[in-house]
Length: 288
Image (cartoon, rainbow, N blue to C red; front, top):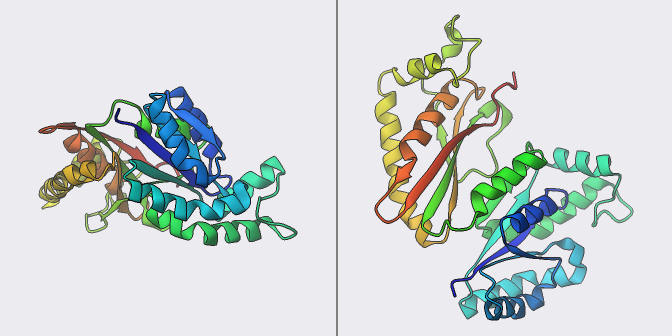
């Protein structure tokens, strides 16, 4: 049996419970707060019980048990187990607001402040974040948006397909931390300086036509799509089924939105041996 195993971890307050519940709704068998030393036995038991999709939540609540996670994952790799690591992250500001709204202490803050606990956890999880196969930044996602993102990434039956989120953003608000690829569109003339287009966004076809009609832009988009298409089979071979392509301009309102829409449209569709489900999302539209 071809079993899919997901290790779900990340920052406290970043939404692990929401993702775990969404996975259960998708038909995954979810085990919460398992000591890492039991991972191997659980995976074997899952195979015997014919569990096709197994998700294990592991986080700092496990205390000393959590410190054994790195060695446990190393042993799993040596044994040839097929698994992925999903890491949920969020900005310090977002995490502080969430802990304050629930009036719960951070599990590592001790007698200090919430920010002290967050800093300690980031340091503890630094190596794990670097090894993660999927990183989801939940800073600007509500519960329903996070559930939707989870479905996009982890829905069953996608072994021969890859999902691509083409995410527009504004550099003035920072580069998305969950971006796998980043493309800069600030070389394109800005519709902001055209009075009749300024109040619109790249979601309006008039803006999109203006952006793409600039000299060399359509060719540039086609070239970039060609590069991504060459990368996708390799991503699939490595077990990566979800890709975030971040497209940035100054404010994330006109150029990046237009280009993201076009790239998503060109990427979406069937390939030789696999399919690509691409959609555009826009982080900073309406922020100004």
